[in-house]
Length: 182
Ligand code: ADP
Ligand code: MG
Image (cartoon, rainbow, N blue to C red; front, side, top):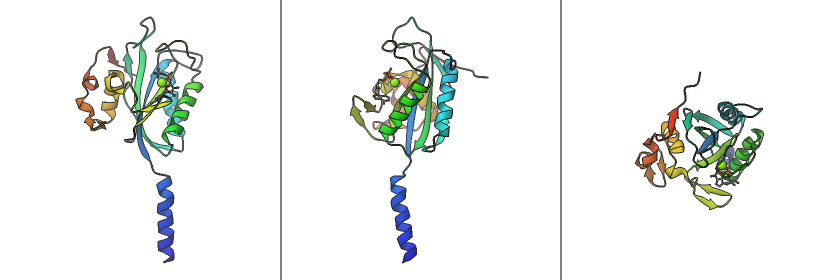
């Protein structure tokens, strides 16, 4: 009886601690005193690995991509990180924004150069559509610099009831190059 009671309590507390599989997209095309674009991504990945509410971190290859907005800016370095987290979606957004601040991100112009951009792509299977947080990420479906690394990490992924392989951009190398890191 006692043991049963303890077991059911343990189950209850594990409900509050459930781990959700998430994917975030990283991008950088601005060097600053804290590092190069590749180093900005690497520092964000280390911070994710060190967060106690994040586990099972997996990182895609790093890609160079042609800029999406203004063309008079350097190519971006992009990667996708997959992990499990006990953070809520909004807590994860705050953590992503903290990482951007730590990279001394400044808002220069829309879709312009930045030392670090961290976007939540997917948070389990939930859908949120608020200006502050849209999940799945609004640009996810058409951005090859997101879908290609995401497919590399999770080739079986279903996004909004559709296999990732059914999204043409997940196999479109236009403007993309695999970065070889030493
Ligand atoms: P972008 O990534 O489109 O270049 P920003 O990084 O400047 O733009 O983000 C602008 C706003 O987008 C942020 O203040 C954030 O609240 C909001 N936002 C909405 N959905 C998401 C998401 N899935 N991940 C990250 N930010 C998001
Ligand atoms: Mg962003």
